[in-house]
Amino acid sequence: ICPELLRNMAPRRRILSTLAAGAAVAYAFSSGMGFVGSNGRDSGSLVTARVGVDYQARQGPRDADVPFTSSAASGPGGVVEFKKRPFGILRYTPGQGGTGAMVQEVIGKSRYPGDPQGQGFAAGVQGGWVVKSINGQDVLNADFGMIMDLLDDEVADPRFSKSVALALEQQGRKAEPAAAPLSVEFATIPGYQWKGEVLGPDWEPAHR
Image (cartoon, rainbow, N blue to C red; front, side, top):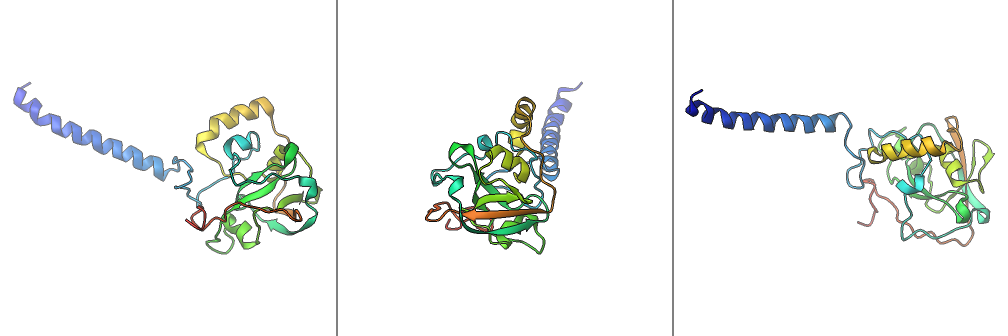
């Protein structure tokens, strides 16, 4: 082949390679392969993780979380009916001894009537509320992992898919997801000072 011809073909090959790589990246994002991150969550296409196992490894505690005892939740909260999953509650934490479940982060907006991710906000669910019962079943002092499995309210994150599958295989479920619609009763702890951050519409702390 003529050397001059080879030199002319090289730039075309580089251009085609660049176009192919760009097309692959565009396809990955359009097909929902992007990660769910704190600065890029797409709340319109999220699905539940369908497992509570190793929840804390994925939704670990924050510095602002104040320890609590679930049995102390004797104050009024509210009863909320969640028609579908996920509920718009991004994070729960366990009480002392690994029992009970407290709401820590709620998405601060309902984008449209019936928005699943806005259910918690529309119902007035607040940080510091403790899950008291699910479909009439008392879970106030139940194992945290069992409560998470019953609620099945975690948004799936592709980064943890393999670790979740492995943990599920090794540990199994502590409960099957409760049937929807779910009636969830919340309670409050008298005198408890919740110090978490209220989330804005973009899922970031509202003050930022």
